[in-house]
Length: 222
Image (tube, rainbow, N blue to C red; front, side, top):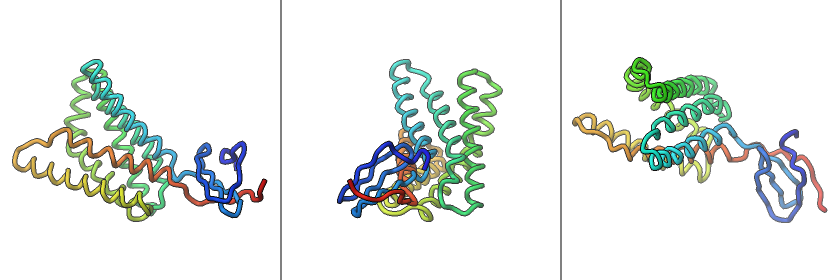
C-alpha cells in the first residue's frame, strides 16, 4: 500500500476511524482493517492555505496597518493553483473537470498578478491585474468556480457535508443577488460580506477529507 500503510494497527469490536498519513484507518467490527485514502488532499491543503491566509492577513493589518491585501492575493493564488489539479479528484464528467481546471488556473494567474503588482508598485502591472483582468473577467471566472462547486455538491457529495454545502452556496447566492442589486442602484456592497465566502472553503476542506473507496488489506485479531 506504500504510504497508506501505518506502522501499526489495533483491532477492536467497534468501528474506529482515524487519520493515518494521507489515509484513514478503518477498524471494522469483524476485526478487519481497511485503509481509506482521502478524496482530495490537494483541496484540503488549498482550503487550509486560504483560511490561514485570511488569519495571517488580519494579523498583518493589526500589526503593520498595511499589507493584508498582499497576503490575501498570494493566498488566493496558491489556493486556486492547487484547486487547478484538485478538480480531477472529484467524480465529475471530464468536460466539467477540464473547464474547471482552466477556470482555477486563470484565477490563480489573476490573483498572482494582483499580488505581484501590490509588491512591485508597478502602475502598468496594476492596470492589467485590476482594471483589465480584475473586473468582469475575474467576476465571471468566480461564477464559473461557484458552478463547479454546485456540480461537486450534487454529483459527488452526500450526508452532512452536502447539507452544509447547500447552506453555504445558498448564502453566497443571496450575497451575490444583494451585490447585483446594490450595483444597480449605484450603491456598494459592504466588504465584510466577503467573509461569507470563507465557509465555502471549509466545505471544500471537509469534502476533501472524506474517505473514499475503502480497501481491506489485513484481517485477524491480537
